[in-house]
Amino acid sequence: MPEAKQIARPAPYASRADFCRIFEEDMSGLYLLSFLLTADRKKAEQCFVSGLEDAADGNLVFKEWARSWARRAILQNAVRVVNPRPGKGFERLSSASIHSDDKVPLTEQEAEVAAVLRLEPFERFVYVMRLLEHYSDHECSILLGCARRDVLTARTRALQQLGSAMDLHHQQQASNSGSQHTASHERRSSVLELMIAPRLVTSA
Image (cartoon, rainbow, N blue to C red):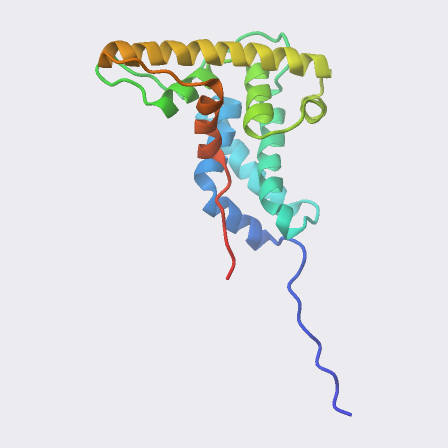
């Protein structure tokens, strides 16, 4: 009898090449995620590169989990670099902050990015992880090494500060344009959420 041909099946695990492709395809969103967490361009670049290395050289991961694993690798690197702790206090923003002058008003996306960067480090991490990356309060507490009540408190403060900052931005827009402009917090959150969301890839 002829020797049975062995059917070649695709490997179930993501390879280094798979992670390199993901980081290339989702570069803008992954870098923005790193930047929002660190609020510093050099640290963001460091976390992006380290995230790629950790994702590619780490434990075996199923291909369908590769994109979420890449984001988690960046997040874990950002936690190590910044070490956000509840009640640690405000840190001075570097030149990475987004500035504007009176002649060039900020866009909706720029205003929200600037507002997130002004948050206290711990509150910033909680906001990005909880509201943009959709981690649970319990997951945030584990990854940040803190109590769940600290996450809940930081989330409330972050939402209040973001809401106030964006309301002020909309008031300035309305004043400049002479029209009434309103937007809910959910709509404002979706702006950044869409900006850092992983790229949708369909296979033939």
